[in-house]
Each structure stands twice: as structure tokens, then as C-alpha cells.
Image (tube, rainbow, N blue to C red; front, top):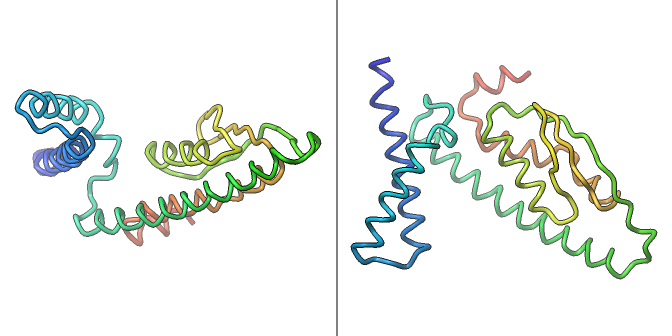
Length: 176
């Protein structure tokens, strides 16, 4: 346990810095009072939830940077999917009522970590026309407003999320 302690503090430090930089950029306050509140808030959030972000702590800094690049690429892809889903909903809004075919789907995921599952559930909900309504284990229950929205849940989103967090060849082979 003694060998992992420094790495544990390093990851908490990284999480704290990421949170504080984000807070500083988004808050727009740089006076002593607000900076102190920001440090306290980011410290509390880091203390309570830093294990969520970096569940596998054996990855190198370069692997984490690679993951950040993959995450940015995924977010760009997700924004495009949101745009396409918005176009579909616009088309549905001008169609006769029969075009709406809402239903609930079950989707089984093979993602490994809580953060990966969290990212999938939120990505589905962010995409117009679909909402994650319940998760039990690896089973997602999703409301889709139409058949086309339901067809968008073809596993591509899950594959891209899994790709973000691949850190080593051993993890790839363990999934097979």
C-alpha cells in the first residue's frame, strides 16, 4: 500500500487542478474571497469524488493525455450526433402524428467502469429523442421518441467510449 500512496495523491492533485482551472475559467472571479471559496469547493469535490474520474490508477501521464485527446474527439463526434438528432426532431415536429412512435428499449452495455457507464448514460440523454430512464447493472432502459432515434443506439457510442479509456493492450485482450 505504501507504493500506491504517492500515486494516489498525484491523481487527487491532478483532479484538484483540473477542477480549479475549470472553476476559475468559468467563474470569472479572481478576488481573494472567491478564490478561497473556489479552492475549498474544489478541495471538497476532489476529496469526495476523485476516485470516480481515475478508477484505474496504473496508467501513465502519457496514457491520460491520449485519453484526453480521445475524449475531445468523442465530444466532437457527440456534438455532431446531437446536431443530427435535432434535425430529425425538427423533421418529426412537422410530420403527422403517426411519425411519432415512442417506445422503451433495453440496451445491454459491456463497459467496465462506473465512469464509462456514466458517460454513456449522459451521452444518450444529451442526444435529442432519447433519454436514459433507468440503469440496472449493465442494462440501460432508454425512451426513444421514434424508430430512427432507437436505431441510433447501435453500439457505436459505446464503442467510442470504450476506445477513450483503453490504456493498454492487456485490457483489449481481456475483453475478448
